[in-house]
Length: 304
Image 1 (tube, rainbow, N blue to C red):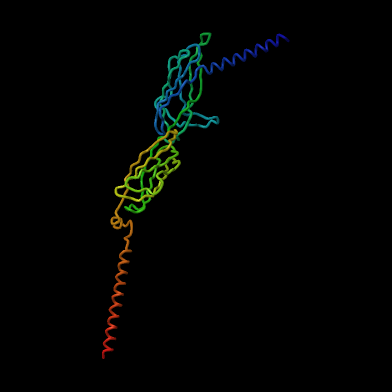
Image 2: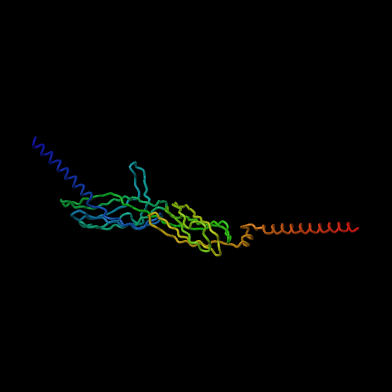
């Protein structure tokens, strides 16, 4: 009975040691670092992967393969958001113990890829020589973290309601997000040039999604040769602070030009007032003349 217990204990210790050995073996060759160039949807970037050998012996014929397509657990074909530019594999002859070697690739993101974080599977294979001087081909699988950045492309336009010098006008700055990702915490600050600002000089907009727009509007009285000088601040997809300086000309017309162009109607009030005054004067003169005529006739009757 005692011998049986000893055998059981030895078996457990052996299994435990074997598990530790397998665990160390599986983690002995690992991805040490991943350096990726800036990657935008529809564009390509470099990918440098450093693989470290933590064995106490060299490994040979080391290859890394990036997996861009395959089957999921149900057997359905899946395609990555990425594709290789050139080869999807790279290899080195040897990685010495406690050293690292680089594997270099170029990848391209599809044009429909949304900015964000992704994973790309890989298979790492190498030859290991065991204690019996036998070469064993080993394989390690894992995933690499890939980041797709958001290219910010903003366009700006300005619109006005009246465009008449000396009159109250509404000036609106339209911000169009033509980039791949959302911009956040957007605000616009106006520096008046050639006009008097009647409203607050700063407007907070918030977020503008990709392929969308928003506007910041201000009340102003136009002078001669006005222009819209504005500072647009926001945070991009990577949460970096960004600033755009805007200088757009504004349109301004004199009242005479605006009347000719049909922007405003001619003000006939002074003419109407003048006409009424003339009528009043004519009426008064007419009354005075009639009174004189009546007085003269009365005097003639009295004299006869």
